Image (cartoon, rainbow, N blue to C red; front, side, top):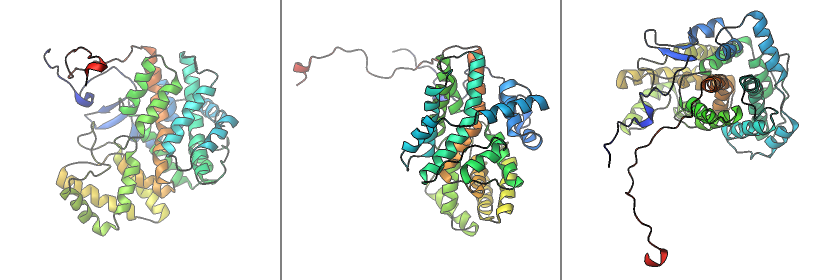
Length: 377
């Protein structure tokens, strides 16, 4: 047997490739997209501008943004065939399974599925950005026995999503909080789902295949599903008054506390203060501060006792709940945002591609002969 190599479980600390899309800047503890801190983008740009930035490297001019928005609006409608497929999904199917299957179907009916040229991949990315929210909303309504609501090209990206889910558009404060969440979730370096997308793309598979695989990776509670788990956890706590006792009981049983810790951030997730600000605005708008007050207790005790900071999912969960979204819809909303980052990485991987094929160190049995069946007793 050869000497055991230095195996990095979970690829911790391994640089798999170069990327110019995003970085966590240690000196400022800021997540940056193409050099811009996300908190600055949240306050001074829109999700549409952020999507353009991730795909093109620079923020758009007014004319470029108008053209980008017009293209997105023109591609929102789902095909009659996809709508028929969505109607056949089990009513109790998880929305993440529904959107994963819907995206795979989109790939089958896309006229450019087999074309992996940069121009075609960009057009497919735009179609996915436009259609994924429509598929998420339609599937959600059908699961409740309601008819899908067609997209409205006169509405902004966020307003149209609320329109398709609820049949109405909320006040500007809610739309701003939603837009901020979309910016914060749009991209985050080589996370599990992004690396999945790049791995699939490295085989020269198509955009839809890469995004389908990314969605499958995102469903897991250690990745995107954490925002759902956070809200389920908060709902277990009767009131903020008993939050500390509830948490200490979790400590006693060494139970996992969702929404805390991050492999990249050691001194706190830089996205949390911005999302927390807008979650608190949502609490004011709705007139329900229970979730944010409970969250504040958990965050204080976790930091004091465990020296662990909350991550983005911790304030995003209650923010989406206060917006009126069903908990199983939280991670599909994440998909509506992260399609921008995934697509940016697929484009970057394809531009200088090499098949991603790591090694494994074998620890099984040495080579041995096959004993014929009659001799095995």
